[in-house]
Image (cartoon, rainbow, N blue to C red; front, top):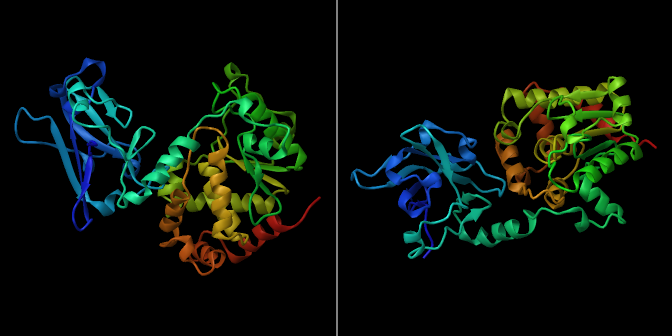
Length: 378
């Protein structure tokens, strides 16, 4: 019998989280009675402690069972699987804090009666209202969380070089490329990083990139990691053709209806209109911030939702050990447009109408964006 850490009401309108601390091996030799509070931390709390998700202990003084019932509608913001993910944050009498996640082993006594929870992805528990999606999540975990070393890429093939660098042209455009950071080594312990950075910079030169949009702020090279700015990138910077924006995973997925998100889109569009093409847009991995902003630019240029999905999910195959379901991107669009992109009769037009009616962009700015990104150049 598998351990169950949440249950849905018959109507599927409420969810109850529950945990018996005696079922887990607590770290540092702690005992269950030393825990004074437990919180559900999750994709829907932005992985932060929230008083709205503090659990209640059962009334019996000897009990170590904690539970919390909430409307299911409050728990729908997805994790990287595209489904809501959660774990438990515990605080002890002496102020220490630690998490219980999917990789926390069961206690010896619990292991005699239970198997670990089966609805998991990496170290998080996953909420599924339809168990038919469980094999899909297991496939993600087994195939797409795998970290690949340099020997796993056939660098004689152009497509494998592009996969390692995570560099490719954005669908719907002629002059916009996306990819990994040109000099920050986000995975310094991987044997791929030096080659990956080298391939990114080769791609910038090969594709005649004139302007760069950086979505992770203006980070200086870390000499301890032997990071350095390539001469080609320095030339772009010296010409004043690099835009630095510091946005976040949380903002681009869960706060796409915010003023800050709209401001990010506006800054990118203004930069593209006023700077020379072709353009390169990136964050650290070229996954989340890059993926969401590229999807907006692609859609405004006429790319279909299916083309956007296919492009977005390619990053999961780059070998970082990271996976992002298109459903996570879809959630961002639902916050933005009030519905899924596949429900839009004309995604380009509906997105254009949203930005104009929200006062973020003008028709003239959108037309200027398209002219810059769709004009063919040698």
